[in-house]
Image 1 (cartoon, rainbow, N blue to C red):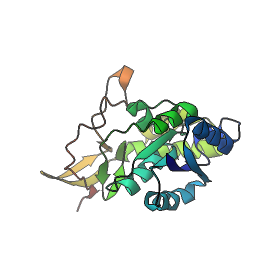
Image 2 (cartoon, rainbow, N blue to C red):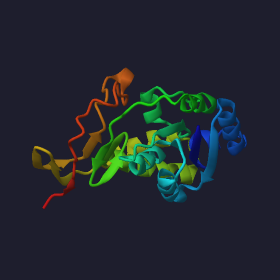
Image 3 (cartoon, rainbow, N blue to C red):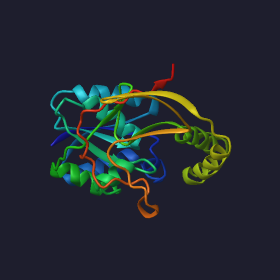
Image 4 (cartoon, helix red, strand yellow):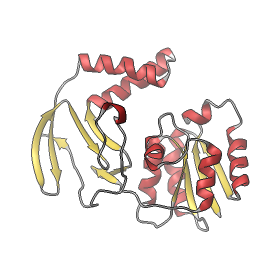
Length: 229
């Protein structure tokens, strides 16, 4: 098996391991019997690197290593090509990998790629942008922006920064006027949060944010939220 692995150099798991990331990845793929062209790239280079990898000849799969943003980008480039996406869950939360049952360890994830096991999952789209988990307007993206600012300014962990950002956002949230356009639906809404999930998200306390399935959509709906006129 021959793959190209595009890896976010600053992925949370890889960056925090304290080891030579490229050497560890090379060893994991070699042990699994995979011929891997491994490219560690900066975050601003990921889009172009994945676009090139999606079209590169002679590959059995394109492997993306990083968090859910990296995987969404890879999925967008691979959609409709028939080329499989291999997942190395190297982000901090790794929601897609968790919901797909992919182990967090690099060696274990490489072994799954080597086994050639594939499954189809749904992709979702809002305003022409493909994603694998969710897309939102309002409270949640506001929290993420504040979280990133907290991490950069105070050096806090991702989880602690998110807690602080959530409390701040909930104290000062605003409502958004949007127009929703989807198959069978045209409507204005006025809301502090629009959340579009790819498949059904669990809402109970013990399973909050998890999905029982990744392939239960009908593949027909494209949501286009726009500012209300």
